Amino acid sequence: MDSVALSERRKAADTPVASAATTARAGAEAETRDDILLDDAGDRVEQHLPPVDGGIAAWRLLWAAFMFEACLWGFPLSYGVFQQYYSTIPEFAGNRYIGVVGTIASGLGYLGAPVVMPLIQRKQQWLRPMIWIGWPVCILSLVAGSFATTLEVLILTQGVAYGLGFLIFYYPILHMVSEYWVARRGMAYGILCGASGISGTVMPFIVQALLARYGYATTLRAVAVALVVLTGPMIPFLKGRLPVAQHQGPAPKADWRFLRSELFWMYSVSNVLQGFGYFFPALYLPSYASALGLGERSGAVLLAVMSVAQVCGQFAFGYLSDRKISTNVLASTAVAVAAVACLTMWQLARSLALLVCFAVAYGFFGAGYTAMWARMSSNVCKSNGDSASLVFGLLNFGKGLGNVFAGPIGGNLVARGGSQFGGGALEYRWVVVFTGVCMLASAGTIAAKYLKNIMVVVKAQ
Image 1 (cartoon, rainbow, N blue to C red):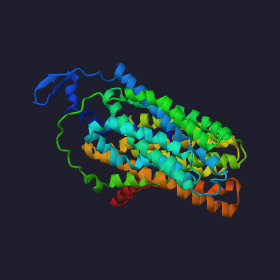
Image 2: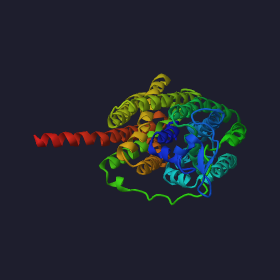
Image 3: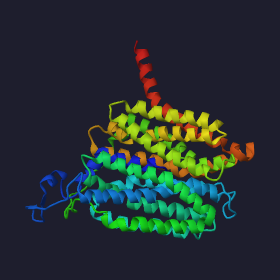
């Protein structure tokens, strides 16, 4: 999962998902403006709460969340460098499923969203314990992975365990941020988005240098120690603004009527198709550059450039979506341009300059699509906030399917390309084609709605 992964979830803060999260504690958010809460007897009592949208506590929490995102998300962002390295050492060379490690590590964060998001809204008291559970799981997974001598063990440690740890601690942190930042929430999540952009430009170079000099075992241990040093001191600052309500009413029943919505299924199919193709460039660009003989650092350069482009794409398409431009037009345009970039620039690239151009175009427009998730959820459920949260969670799940399966699918595509075209860059031909076709199919799913409407009008005349 790349830098857009976090922005996708952050965009939920602009949907009814986050407004539900900010009111889930202590009865209702409306009470907090007067610092009035209800005690056990139902009497109104005064309680001083930290201010929203500013103040020491709010900025302290945002800084802690920034560090967690930059460090603990920056590591999965650089898995393409790991994959290039793993494919060259005797322990893992020749195994077509090396990519599964990275896709599972990031994909579980998507797949688990429909479970974790409702859970933290109902079990407010679990927020900090979940952080204390998930964070060490991530750290220990890297230490355990450093002892791996088979790909299966590496998948279970650096892949599954890291992904589960991230899933457990990350959503509680987002929930806390949404409590402190209300009117200025867009700015707060923009800062977090910048964290993934910064880490995405720096982490690949650090990982590449460590792998080249010390090997994967020492690199994984060094990264684990660095994560402890950089993020451990931030944990005391990860606290929600609102006190946990001692008595919570029964959770509202889920409203699944949106499943009958044609719009929901259009977005879902488009999202799954985009997800199946989206992750391949970040996964294979370093190996592709290496096959072209462009130098050891070329892969890190491409990942860094793509990371910056993704952040810019998120901001640009998010801004445009707030300007009442059609969500369907923006989403279909984004994936269509990404598809063209794959089938032209990546397909024809034999130089670092053209690969950089591809990384910019693909990163910008590919990330632009995922910035539409919050707006898609709102379009499907215009008047039902609880349903919008379900839609957003299911969009996460659909993207996660593509993320997780990208590893085995990509491995088989590379193997097929190698058997047909031999070694070198040509063995990635089917990966390039598959990515472009998935993007085109995603755009076509949305465009088909307009074609259907046009046909109805034509027949009516």
